[in-house]
Length: 401
Image: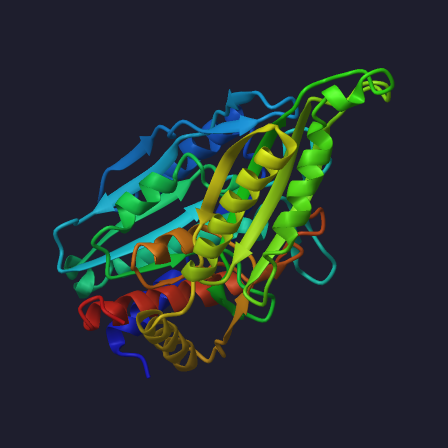
């Protein structure tokens, strides 16, 4: 049952103009590489979140890099990250995060927002996660109307690079997570409202192999075939696959004319460890395989990348946070469940800092990362009330689930 203050706050959240915000923000292309669109979107969000009682800062991205098909390393530009800080010395300290980039580049054919015949909203980023940002804002504005607001300090972090692994915001996420009692991230829930529970981690690597070219007919024995070495390495990495670790050698780039022993190749590989121990095992296997192939095939191997998303198992504090949100849902007439997933997000990084987090507090929707992406609009008020009530009840407990 809701208290009087809780009921008033939930009503304030329910009546917020979330759909209007979602539609306006989704009309702006903010693909991860569209710096102009990201700049425009950051400005819109800064204006919207300035309604909350704290300074809004646009934090420049940390340096990030990518490895091209020829093995060269280049800098990659990202947009600024929005950070709002409210009452940092309050006894209850929470973190709320999201991202404003999408997977749709500026030249992608999927740009328009439309209402489907069944009432769903189809559009780029409507669920992932501009609807979630609208929910976050509505909940925080509602909390600010309550007597408990003075006891609640928080930071909002909205980054510009989540869809590409948060390379320029990972350190900022860790700084913002420091000292927080709990966190909510506003990635979309499943269409039925199910939350993501435990998550595997993810490591992406670009492995540059340099061999020695030679004529394929006259003196092939003098060459050192980089493509064969990359393939050998891929097969050795496959042997690390186990019940709690998946390994996906995704692509080998390199080679040239049929009459030349190739002296260059790049192997792209992804690891998905389920626990920190699995991540350590994957790293050890990678290091051993690289050393072995380099020695046996007489090639040079450079490894770029890392485990940008640590595994996110559910610890007791996280389980208590899920139980609190489920109880809040029950009081609002919402059935809340959760299940493990292999997908990753900024919630992985927050959990690795020792902060309990639920990272799918956003809208209900589906078909994300495709032209069929959709938002269920009635989930906006539902989820805003859920967040509002969960924040207030966390405050009652001193911030600890």
